[in-house]
Length: 95
Image 1: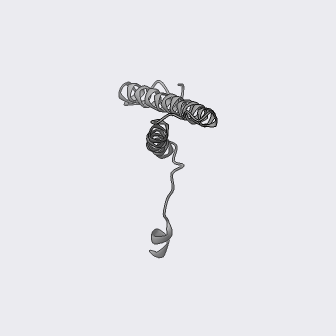
Image 2: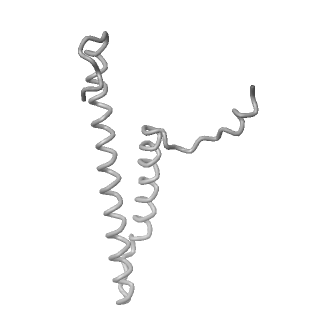
Image 3: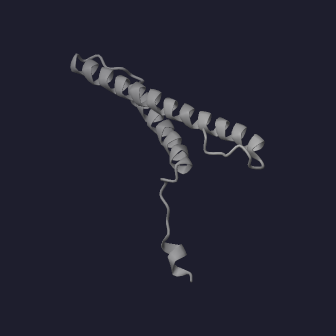
């Protein structure tokens, strides 16, 4: 975290805020990884159990909800690293 030089004004304010934002970013990455592992596990178990004719009743709904939450987390991560989708067609029309 040596991106701030020690003598700059406002470092006492910016450093704690940067630590919080970095911790939130790492937390969102962890949440996304957990959701991905849960989705793969639930869908895999459901597929295997369907071969035996059993199936899990709630697997479809749970996989759908996990995908929705993964999309929300991915959107917030994309905005943080500026890799989100931008529509620049309208901005290019203006001088």
